[in-house]
Length: 508
Image 1 (cartoon, rainbow, N blue to C red):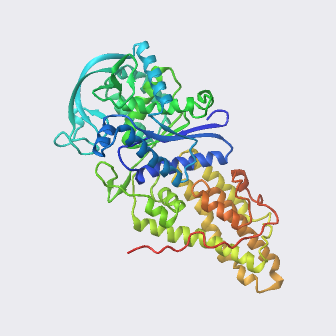
Image 2: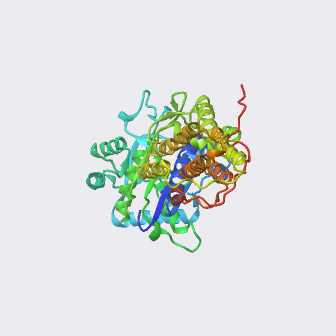
Image 3: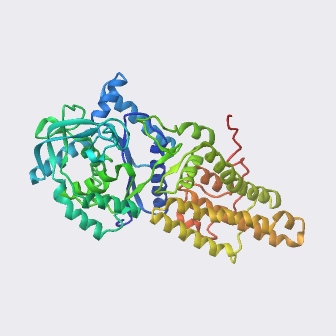
């Protein structure tokens, strides 16, 4: 990060089929990072969007009985709607069919051609249309199947334009030596490094007989390879995201790029080599997360093994989905999505631990103090604990340990629940001589819950804003510095507005 700016990206999602929980997962995790950085006062640019070119899209469109443009328009809108439903706070939604993006791809490709990093040659190889990628025979599964999708690979022979990827082997190794945090977690960095050390083949960056794509500027009989086109979205978006303003100087290079492990090679090997060739600064860091599994298997639109997020959102609310995904799946690792696990987290943690904590706090202040929140005691032991929790949350976000960040915040939630039992305000209320103790207990609870809401706001923004309103606090100022002890608004009055996470009847 430079000068208080923070540029964050998700991969752009391929519009060959409907979005599923795997797409929601990456977008939600990125949104948590973006919201946390904004809480800290950073000038954030958060980018997501859709990848819309290539043979796979053309085939999917034909199967659906529509043109590639019609197909891309329809599916891109579904991904845009998903982002809005998820509460994603992205600053721009890019489509690779945007004319300014296509112009930027042509400009960068021409720059590489002029420098001698692009040349023409014949090529033959095993190609998976679902991956839009070539594989060596030793990489294929049984029956020459795609190692990712298990579908048969096709043998393709074409005369294409190639990028001299092999020429960047030593520079890429030097990058990994100099920047050990360039790719995280460490295991993914080691995996990418092995790909480089094992030897890099030059990359075919154009296709013949694929009309749905960006034409090669000097050879319009060919179109640009979909991955070369797609990767450049991270750069091109800054050139036209805001009318009449070029944001490249302000935000480039990206501070953090999130992606799933199946596209590691494209981002950790090919992408930095492309930028080196184009003379552009490299991203400061990539974070590669695992898969969201269903029934122990990776979700895939190709195989149909997917979870639709919308029914869970409709039944439990978007914040419950956001919370479940970051708590259940340790960020960076594979994790399994189950309806049973979702319902258990919702009931045990959201409803019973956080929701009930708020309800008890507000109800007791309403009953015992006529809805007026007592001032928290300045010498409370919770003040020091809150400093520790805030530092732990910030540190976890800095390391992109998102699951850890939520766990650190949840320590405060559980501490406050214990405090309710330890202080027993209902007992203090029965003795007028202990009125000051009751004020102290209720003030501590209200202040602790308010701070917990701010720490958890990037995860569950809507619910945490409800918490703030229930405590009589402004919900339009969620800056992280307000999580310090004693920063609550004076003279607050609580509002008993119903359960935060109401009981949900789950269909049999």
